[in-house]
Image (cartoon, rainbow, N blue to C red):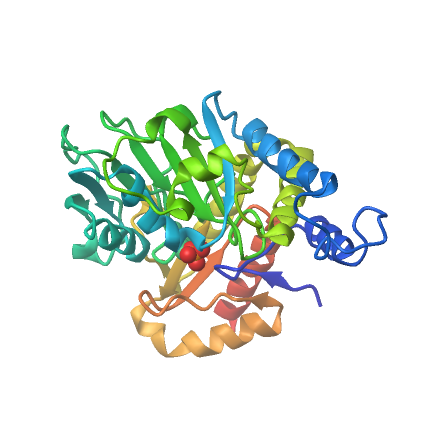
Length: 354
Ligand SMILES: *Cc1c(COP(=O)(O)O)cnc(C)c1O
């Protein structure tokens, strides 16, 4: 039976990327050595790093003056590194969920934080709009896709102050106007690679404006200066990111990913809205294309476990919702084929008949 991985993260990756990574772990490009055992300073690995940085720049059309870094520590470490490097007096945060809240919590260790808006009042089922951005804050931080609640900010917002975004769960799913941001980061394990590497896209001249001392490893300038090789980088996850980037390019780039994301989301949300057993949890206009959250209608609530088991028997892996939302979450990252979503819709229809 064909299995479809709807897990929220770590998550589905292109078969080609996983296969190429597995092969490289045994014999790296015919060297007779594993990718795991060669020096990160070797010319063979240097090429992997160079190619991965160049390809991310190409696919996202990252302008000159920005650096691409592949670091350790996950998006969670960026929550602290961002204020360390950018917060002098005051920072602004848009609160759209658990991850956004965690990012904000770290910033509070370094200075004043203004929460420009929050959707906590409705369990983060929408993305606040028309909020005021304090002109005297050092930066505005947003989370473009809220992995747990299934809401997404699909347009790059205009910010009068430097804009920083956590794009952990929607990077490369649509074209992004990188010039609107001074910094974009995310854990790679949702749309880009296996767990273990964090991507950072940073505008070089946005740094160096805080007066505090920054520990060497937490200073973005260290990693820019050393080409993301100040210390030993996570070589296997970077290699797998490169393979995923190659796959995205071969599929037609972010435009193709964007089209596919729209198609998957339309198919699945249409069924959620049609099927009398289910309802979506996020407000329609802010629905995420990456994490599609839905629950059983109140009168069918007791069927939740049955549907999970029914779907699992049919190869739908990882659709149990996050405990903060309940119900179901079908994560449809870049590598999810449209057929996967069609198969899930088939399950929902069959279950409804039953
Ligand atoms: C998963 C996730 C994180 C946490 O990433 P880690 O790499 O595990 O630290 C942060 N932000 C968002 C939006 C996420 O989806």
